[in-house]
Image 1 (cartoon, rainbow, N blue to C red):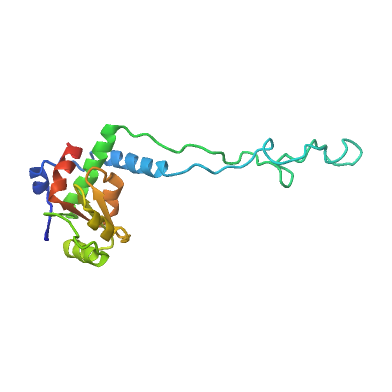
Image 2 (spheres, one colour):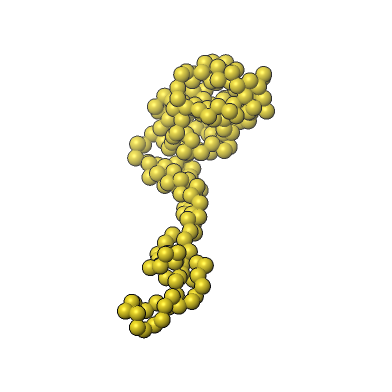
Length: 204
């Protein structure tokens, strides 16, 4: 299999919605990537308040006569083992992005990579023997010696998926599932011919 660079003219002939205006879509890309990062946050940091710590509730010393400040228990935050004042509580960091913004961001990211000469097309991508060595060799022959490669296809055989599952620097993604962040993250993007129609529908 051989790969050729997908240029703007080729993308337009494949009916991909190329955005040539430099300013259009930049904010959408930022909003989508920030939302994706935020949605991965668990928000599970948690501290116990004075009402939740395991404290006896017993008065530590008598009210008067000791010369010390009066204390009603050992749960307040000034005591060792007491509750935390204004500490983190479980929260939801997720951000919502509307469908039109997601579509615009995807089209903008893909357009930028095409304009930069980072998108390659090939007739198809399949590793029939299911071996990792064959997988790495095939990707290198298509994309060259690069740090990270994204391979996009309509679908992949089980042998191909098995061959590539242990290679961290190369990601196999369906054209239906690839997202804006992945388009921006990888050094080279290899697209199988059967995936162009799906990408065109996602950018229309």
